[in-house]
Image (cartoon, rainbow, N blue to C red; front, side):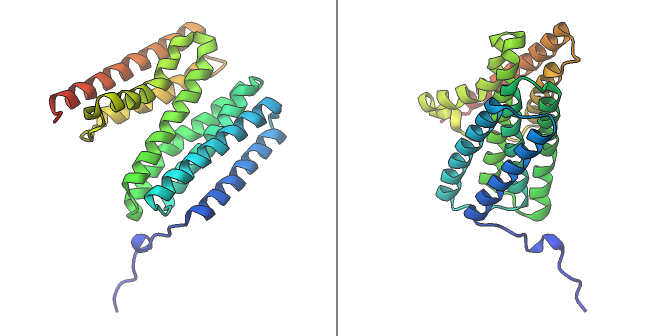
Length: 236
């Protein structure tokens, strides 16, 4: 008798409308939970809702163009986006910094799972990798914007560097060429979120928060510079 097929042999992929409906319900559940526990004011609700709606519209457009059906890893990435919108709302309220730190830390922790889940279930895709990258980039933008009033506007460089690079690629198309895999790049990306979350924690002394964020920015600048040099040497 043949062995039963592994669970990942037929991964479940969901159509876009079901994914967006589930994401909307999940976002509302998270915001209601935050409203009941730490409390979420009008600014928090408005910011989180605006971020979620804008993100959902962009995701719907991209997924429709790619004709992408969502797998388990995409669902995890979408959960991270939900937590990012909630983090933005909590930071906009500026009344519950520990709740914002905990929500952002949970989003960062989930980032460790979606890649392995995609590989294990055989659902890795170019769309999923791009979705994961954009989710990371937007969380960094939210955290760096929150750090700016505390440490200075220079922290925005962490959140905007990815978008500046993408804008530069329109002027210099060789910047949009694929890069080889790099563990160093992934490690530097992970450091950014960790450093910003630590800097935003109320218990972190101001000098230490500034040092952590500055070190993270230096690493990010090195990583982008390294990739740009590689792309320039191999441009066609």
